[in-house]
Structure formats: C-alpha cells, structure tokens
Length: 519
Image 1 (cartoon, one colour):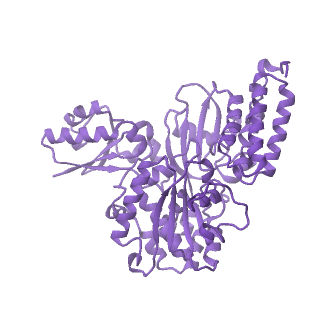
Image 2 (cartoon, rainbow, N blue to C red):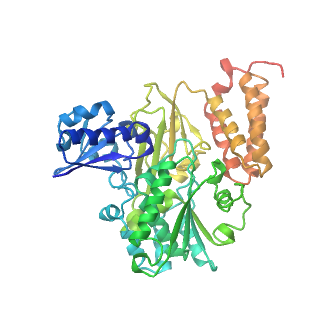
C-alpha cells in the first residue's frame, strides 16, 4: 500500500531546504523499496519547525520537524512511513500546542491539502460556500457578509458588507472584483501563506463576491516578490476553469466569473487601493483623490470591489456556516477571527488564527514563547511599519480595532514584530520617516516633504543637536502629516514616530538629559 508523505512548498520551507528534503525522501524510499507518494502542501504556519514533514498513517497524520536533508536516512530507517519513533517526531500536528490553541476558520486547509488540486480542495470542504451563495440572490449574499460583522482585513477595518452593497447597487455595464494581494508590511505573511497553501479559498471568495455584486471579471494584484504564490495561483486558476468552478457557467449556475493574476510593480504604495488601481491600469502607482470611491468609479472607471486576501478568504466559511456562526467569534465590533503574524525577536514565529480579543502579551508568551534572544521584551510593533510601538505596560491591550485605537495603535494586517531590550527606539523612529520618504508616491506635500524633513530632523535629535527644539519640530511635522496627507502612507507614519517618543523618551535623551551641541 502506498504511503503519502506531505512536504511543504511554502516559501519559508523552501528557503529552509524543503525541495532537497522532498527529493531525498523520494530517493531514500525508492532505494528501500518503499511505495511512497509525495504531496507538496502549503505550510501550517509553524515556521520554527519548517520544513515540517507529515506522513499519513491509519491513525492519522504524524508530523516530524524541522527536517534537514541529513535527517532523511535516519527518519526512513526509524520507520517514518509508519509514524515511527524519532527525536524529530512531533506526533499529531493538530495537537501541537501552537496549533491546538487556534481557531482556524480561514486557514484550516493550509498545510493539509495539495494547493492546486480542485478535487483535494472540495474533499476538504471547498466550494460549499459558493454552493450556498448560488442558492441566494445578490441581496442575500451581501446580507450574510454584512451580518457576519466582517471588516476589511487589509488594515483599515472598514465593514466589508457596506463595500459589497455599494458595488452591488451601482449601475454599470461592467463591474470588477480586485484583490489587493500586495502584502508589503514588515512582519506580515498571512496572504502569502494562504495563496501558496490554499489558493482556491481566495478564488472561491472572489467568485462569491462576483456573484454578489454582478461583477464578471476579477484581478488578483500580487506582490512581485511572491513567485511561488504567483505560480500556485496561475495553476489553480487554470485548474478551476477546467473543473467548471471558474469562468463560464460556474457550477452549472449560468453565472460567469473570469479571474486573472497580475504581478505588482514592486512599490509599497500600491498596497493603497487607488494606487493599486492606477498600477493595474498600466500607470505609475499614485494615490487618487477620493471621491469618487472605487466602489463607484474604480478599475477603468467602473464600479470595483477592492478587498484584501484575508477579507475574501473569510467569505467562503461565512457563506457555508452562516453569518451568526462567524459573528460568535470575537468581541465588540471586531468579530470573527484575526490572522496574526508573529515575527521579529521571537522564539516561535509563525501564523496564528484566533478570535479577536486575545492580548498582545498572550500572543507573545503563549504562542511565541518569548524572545529568541532570551532577553526581556522592550517594544512590540503591531500593524506593520506604520503601526505603533507598544511598551510592556500596554501589552495587555486586546487585539481589537477599538481597543487598539484607544491606545493610539492599530491592528492593521495583524503583523506583530517583537524587539528585546537591546533595541534603539530613536533609530526605529528614524526608520519610519526613512521608509515613508522612500515609499511615498510623491503626490501630496505633507507626505513627500514631511517625511524627508522628518528624517533630517530626527538625525539632528540622534546627534544631540538642539534635541528639545528638534523633537518639538518632529511633533509639529507629525501633526501636519496626520492631518494633511492624502492617504495612510503619510497619515500613519507619525504613529510609530510619536509612539516611540512617547513611550521610550530615554532613547531620545542621551544620558538622561539634553546635551548641548552646535547646529
């Protein structure tokens, strides 16, 4: 009887030698006369254990990891194909504490299935959401999304149902669905893990959106640095068309939805929806003034639904299980689950999907196991490079849109980057200005000039040149950028800067006082 061995094809696993491990497993099994089938899956998101190899046994899957090429012979000799004992044996992957404590609604297939197989996707519950959607009218689908409480997972947290309803009601001869997959925030990788590990979940979510809004064509605007995701999406889309779940007459419903994946232009600003649309149309990615909003005048001037990968991939579960089942997770106005990406100076980095309301400290300690260096946590940045830096006394803040906003922070795309007590927060504040100056599209003065002047002024502070006066100037610059920038690029840059100054003032005051220096 053939034994199935699952080896991840996720970018992190590949970087740690997964392809070499897969080839060694196949060669080693062949030389031993073992009948083995190797299936390349995505990652479950336990990155410190990658490559994590799993073997199918009559009792269920058994995981081993992290597996290096030099471990393969010993694993096969120890009975890997039957779940044999070995120092790298992890047992049932679902019972690994990091995974067992999660509520995986969106990511439950990642690391489990062959990402580009329609049959495998459907065998694990795929397309039940679309089948449920096709039994409803457009208003019924949108009502499910609205009543679920789903908010945009791209960072702004705007209610998804309102966007969907606006596009649904818009009158036009052509409408579009666009997925913002230009995942560029530091410490974020949930979109990539999904697209490499379960691309049909995104495809299904976008198809449901097309049926609900009357859009017959969709585009995935993908970050150019994600070649593995690009190949997985292209293959999945082609397989979906062949299987009748995409293209003309979807599942025999008479509905049409065509989908393409387009590589981005390599600019951080294209993560902003109007810059993305400019780039998608073949122009330089520059922010558009609003109104008109994309829902009314978006791609090629037509009504366009723009959502993030995590927003679209939450939809199939909602349609399959119902709005109430999804809304039962979370707290307050932050309902459902949040994909958290834990990175930085952390012992156990990876992807965590849990209901809104878990605290930052719980994520770092219960899932992450503390810092990798073993030193105390000093600062945690939540929400990407434009998110606030939180000190220890704010780490009990729940990951919830309103709770984070009350502490002058943001959930963003759910990225958490941990720093130990060796971090220089003045340098981190400087980096925020440097990043904005480099990535600004240049359309508005507060962002274009403000970030450059901010960088120059922060350099003076760090050098001890009139630090008190220059810190006051930084504060004034931040106020102008917040109030006057056209988009969140300039509008949110002050958040990491001011949080660093507010919570870690000692890093801006060498030796505890302001030194006197010449201009």
